[in-house]
Image (cartoon, rainbow, N blue to C red; front, side):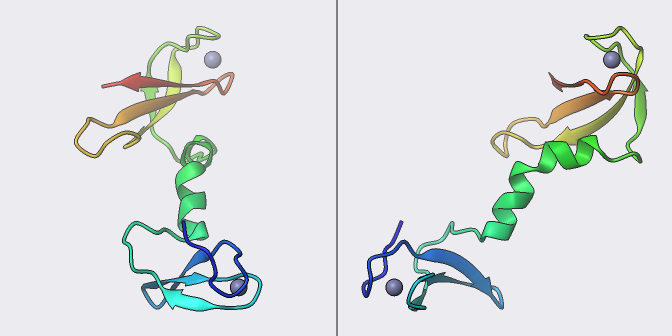
Length: 106
Ligand SMILES: [Zn+2]
Ligand SMILES: [Zn+2]
């Protein structure tokens, strides 16, 4: 976390042409981000809404698995890498009948 040397406001990471800058939202102060690992607001939004977006996707494949909520035996499924990259991905299911979403660790 870095702060503006001019007015003391928190600097916001912003990506321009593949380079991440830290920009002050108040006075417009801008400097190149020295540390790696900064992500832009747009990227963070994508990550956090991953499950919801996929759950609404009508083009997902359907598999035979029993819904723990209503007992229906068909559900949409998709796979997501939700934990560390070296761990196996998590499989998600969404019931075709009641819309309940649950996950299964593979
Ligand atoms: Zn400032
Ligand atoms: Zn169900």
